Image 1 (cartoon, rainbow, N blue to C red):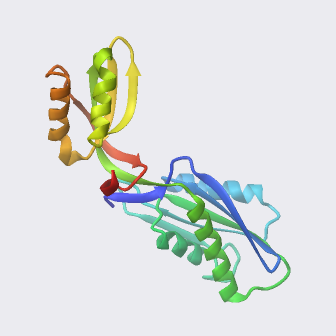
Image 2 (image 1 turned 30 degrees about the horizontal axis):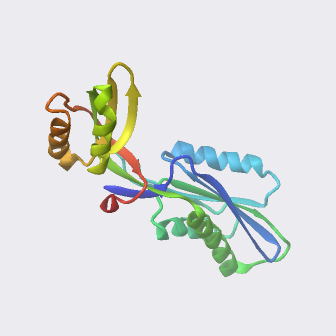
Image 3 (image 1 turned 120 degrees about the horizontal axis):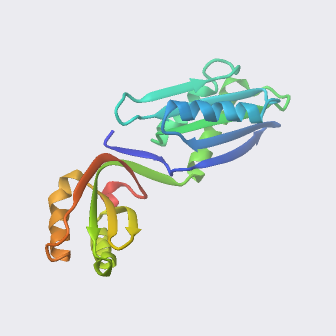
Length: 218
């Protein structure tokens, strides 16, 4: 996928709902690899050893591999927990996310339809409360600037849509930015004009970069 809707880096939150005395506690986290997802699932299970079920689902899109999905009913009737959770992630178009719903049984059976609604709602509410970000392929560039010009030039690059990844101040200022690959010439020209032809960008790599808004809005 060119642009991925996801959870902001570091997201780890919980959401709880109660239905007929059963508690459904969703743990939702940003996970960029299946290993991170599995670690979260194991951690939640370890934190809730007395729970009747710890159902899980994730959607992960590695940059250089096929998209991955997982769902587990963890003892609930087949198709009543993991699949609704997975569909809730899909419906929100939220990738690189793992949801684990811990159920403490309240003594009243909910039936298949009730379970589907409970697990789906718990995940949907958790996603709705999360801070959303976007992952997009970006060209990472670096340049060295005179300290007296660095702040002004950084501001001009930001104004043109560059994402500033790092600024290291020393006798020279090392500035690292991420841009849309197709706009490389525009930023080369911007830097040349802003620095009177002194500074140039060096290509570092192309990788996914996290944005606060979808690319069309930045």
